[in-house]
Length: 101
Image (cartoon, rainbow, N blue to C red; front, side):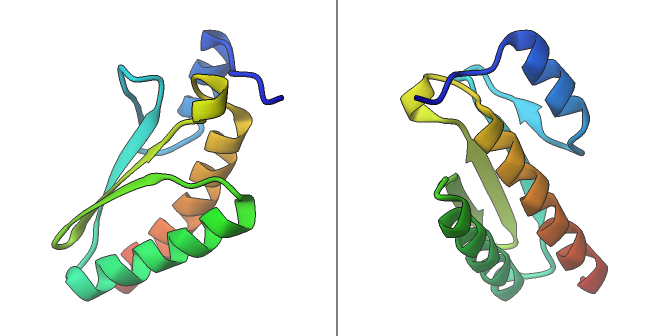
């Protein structure tokens, strides 16, 4: 069984992530801005590949060139290490996309 992180653990982990915010619904969220719709789709597909690899699937919203990712672990009723692990790997993709834009 996966256990939700404490507030202290969450605060420590969120500081290590650039631009991610805590939501009221016990999740972390970040908005990525890409250069266009096709780049947003490419980014989402890369996130999808990571999500499958980690067996942890974010909520994804695409608005033209903006992608909002929301991570939480529903089975734990809050945030777990899985959320922060996936966010850390998504950051690497996001930085690569930023450098190409």
